Image (tube, rainbow, N blue to C red; front, side):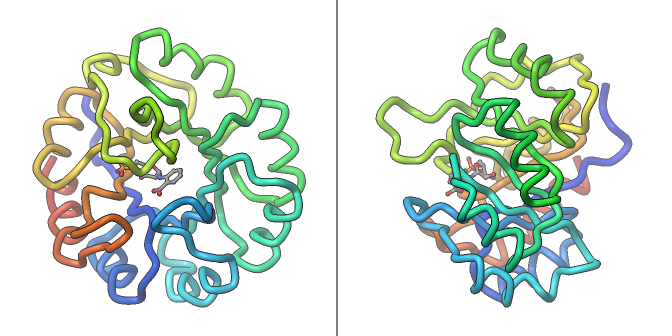
Length: 216
Ligand SMILES: O=C(O)c1ccccc1N[C@@H]1O[C@H](COP(=O)(O)O)[C@@H](O)[C@H]1O
């Protein structure tokens, strides 16, 4: 079933002008990727300075990949995100540790290629605030997300989950309307689809994406 309104997260922001485009367009969440292998990596101190303008206007998310306690503590103390997105091979037990260590809410990204991959939501829902269904990256990819890959959206058609959930993976202004119509996603997440080059966000593409979500 189609939600009343779908809300959006703009991920991998590193500059004031692109963060401002996300805020002006009504993004519900903005994301900082704290993962040095990513072209969107931003260290917690730089992210704290940048994202200060977003506080109280939108949720701030720190995207991490199998981060250790030292990095998570640094993120919690310096960036103070509302939510931590786990995008690696973390277990539900580790998610509980991350919540206790950081005091932040948890988004769990689940990699999807087949219908069986969706079923992981059953195990994860009790220990997270949000689920995220993202495409499984191509074999040999250096990144577990942020690669612009899509999956078969019909796998999510008619599905309901006990937590709010994001659809992610290869979304852009041109396809997000269809993705929302097929999946009924209450939340969508985008990174490379609003970039002019890997790691280079484009304010006009961010605005177009958020417009497309609003009209979906
Ligand atoms: O964006 C990244 O570089 C990244 C790195 C490591 C883990 C997750 C990452 N991004 C997440 O993946 C989704 C989907 O990306 P895309 O739209 O397909 O490019 C993105 O929104 C982030 O949540």
